[in-house]
Image (cartoon, rainbow, N blue to C red; front, top):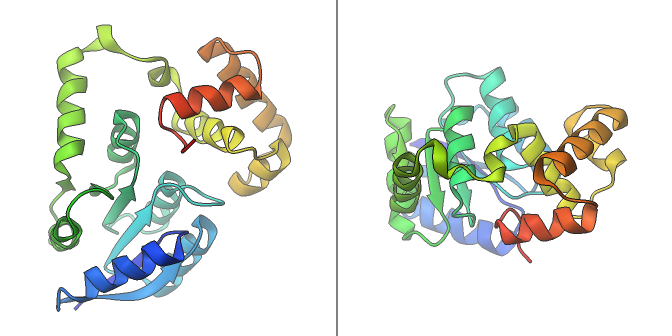
Length: 212
């Protein structure tokens, strides 16, 4: 049996995913987490064969969970499960070392296929993710967006600010100082040519970094 850690902050969604995964017959969910902090803790304690992580969760987001798990356990196959069909997430996921990327609107059997493939040492990207990467390559440097100028940490701080998190809450979540968060916020406003947190939130919604 392939042992899976599943992290998603929506209990109903998580229950549905458990059913889909375990109906496969050769995969079992051995640990469930409802936020990013718990996902890291459960992943390090349970040592699953594959981690399936929702990218949008309270506390650490999926990219941060993946980074922390892979830092402690470089061989762990991680699949990001997401509603976000934005190329930025695909690119950052690949850069982080994630082996799989599946959108929630993909057919259920795609997730099962993804788990089996990454467990076997392969990479699995959903059709939507492949199309986004192809478009990005076809566009080349001339088609870069403002998001391309952001580091992964800046992208994460942008998302947390847009969700209404305070600088102190963000600092605690990512184990950095409040002053460092202030610096990230200043860089974000400058790079994106925005004036305040309200405009950061509007920008994040327009670019599908958060749900409206």
